[in-house]
Length: 260
Image (cartoon, rainbow, N blue to C red):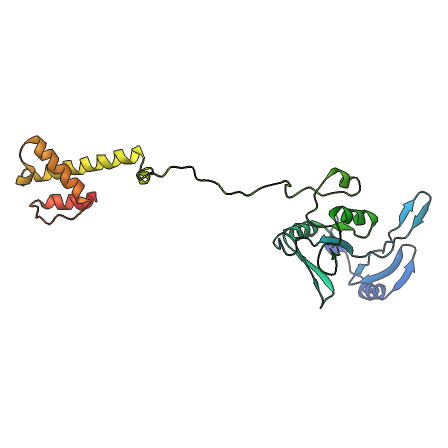
């Protein structure tokens, strides 16, 4: 490989670079002009070729976007159009406009457009949606943004984008509550699992209290049925009110706090 470090530097290199930067002329490839050490790209001209003939298209203009004004007052979140007298421009907002602007922002180039309200001076629509499509077909508008339904006869004249809202007829009606009123309705949220868990916790707590108290407390002594009833009653009543009677077992009180 060549050793670039051994290459010398021309003494007149800087002067030559300055001379080329100050040189400008028109050549076969266009305007020769060096700016900041870089040759400016050639300027291309767009032409339309039709057979053996060609034509130069006019200067690009802003796209005229027609916007129906039917939902200006009824559904402002969907589409709202108003004319600003200060700027002499039509301002459009709403979900339809947001979808259109999001699609334009994806384009790799700058697309200039302006909204034109399809309305009468009083704010109402200037015609039907079919008439709006006809004006689009005739070239009055370059595109239309709004709640235009895609149907077969309209597709014969214009092209539609992919639908972003499903169309159809819907109704909102009040429902009738056919459920019967029941005084025990509050028990419905209590499932069998919850009942079994609750009863099991009462039995377990009563057994723990009986095991700690029956040796030193006379209230937990006697026939087996009396002891079982006293233990379960104490377990159940603890959830309702506090016992004021003194229990001699400190272990019972500490176990009671832990269970709660």
